[in-house]
Image (cartoon, rainbow, N blue to C red):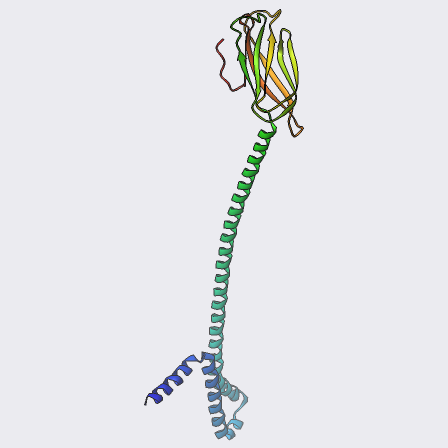
Amino acid sequence: MKRLCAWWEEIADWWKAQKVEWYAAYGTVIYIGIIILVIAAKLEELFELKLNELGDFLAGVFGPVAFLWLVLGFLQQGRELKLSSDALRLQADELKNSVEQQSIMAAAAIKQIESQSLAFDLQLQERERAMSALFSFDFIEDPDGRFPSMAHLKMTNYGGWANHVYLQFLPGIGGTGESYYPFFRPEQSRNISVYFENVEPGHKIGQCRVRYIGLDKVARSALFSYEAVPERRWIFVKTPNENNHDL
């Protein structure tokens, strides 16, 4: 009994698995076979029909078959359109996912480029600092008054090596105009004397320019400002961003 039930289930599954076109084809074959049998039984009457009657007969016989296959054609076209629509939808989803992935990759590439550019800028800045000198000036007091007509500065290099260093006061102070030093080692200091001979008293303001050649053989310069009071034998050289010194 169980085998019989299983056999019927297999047959039912087989019939369910068949497409509508399969049933339509076999139905059409059976229908045409029945029509042939009927025509064979009434063959003499068929020959006696007039042309218009014969046309009406053929139209009535084959009309249902034509209508059946017309409907099946529409169904088939609908299935194909659905498959095509599903395929287009999948392509649209894939394209959307591809665009999102490309956007993510582009954003990551931009961040990487920005990081590399920042790292490169930092390297350039670090190299520039290594190749550049960093000068600073300190006033050296003369409490004993041993040098009544001059003031003294200590010029120190806190940066890289500098060659052919030119120090120039604009405008010059007394007998002090431009000084030259063959080199300035890192952490090296030199004393600079500023002469106030034949300098009118009062508050003097000007610029102090330092020109030099770095280790990379590139000419560089640094600009400072100075304030001086000749009668007090006092001079202060500062960077532009330093606060004014109270004289």
